[in-house]
Amino acid sequence: MESVTMLVAERPVVIFSRSTCSTSATIMALLSGFGANPTVYELDQIPNGNQIERALQQLGCQPSVPAVFIGEQLVGGVNQITSLHLRNQLVPLLKRAGAIWI
Image (cartoon, rainbow, N blue to C red; front, side, top):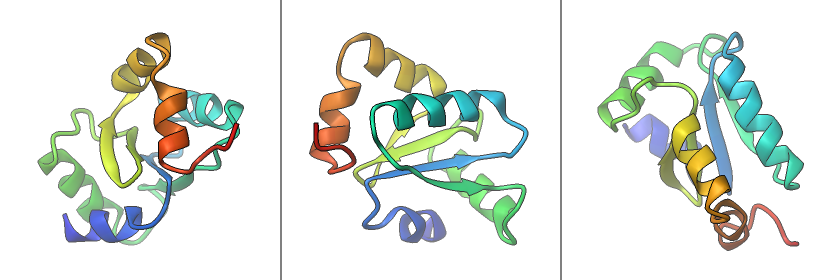
């Protein structure tokens, strides 16, 4: 879990994904549409991807991708991000994290 903590430190939005995950691409497009520029780690393309995926699962990410961190806090996956968006809570969260300024 320490590796995950280090990767999300001081970054407003971080997404852990797999290059073949269509739901991850949808979340990236949604966040980018608001003006956020998420840091994306494709777990199938980085050397310690399997270790990071196990750490995400230990944090409660089921499935492990996409895993979205906003303001260094685990928000969750596609269901949690969609829910925040539908309740008009996603943009304020992104603003508080310094990911967007509108």
